[in-house]
Length: 133
Image (tube, rainbow, N blue to C red; front, side, top):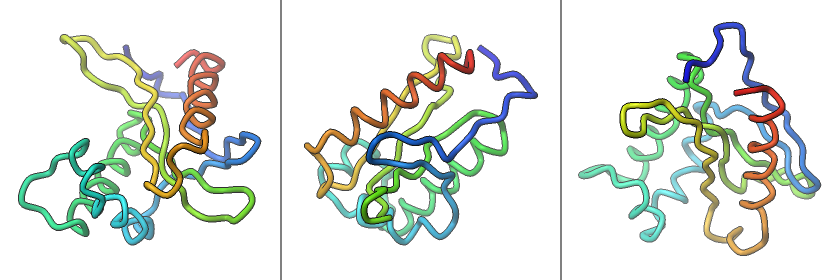
């Protein structure tokens, strides 16, 4: 699957409780909290890196995805508090030699179990179908 060169991945997507925005270098500081979580770290193994280094690599990789038109995770911001609660988005992944689109999400631990992941994943799923990604 190739993303069309003229496809514009959008942020500013809204759900009842969330708004999305593209990640920036400034998000490394907040993402360190996720990378310090021992459970979360098992899902994102980056050997021999500190939580800060892991967060930097994560953000750098996402920014590279944006530049290469490979979609990527976006920040999930609470409409109520304006706080950063996690990430979600569409990812181009290689599966058995074929490019596929994945809906992905990662939340800071304190926001788990509140329905944010489902809300975000459904929004990105719908966005993907609406824009024929």
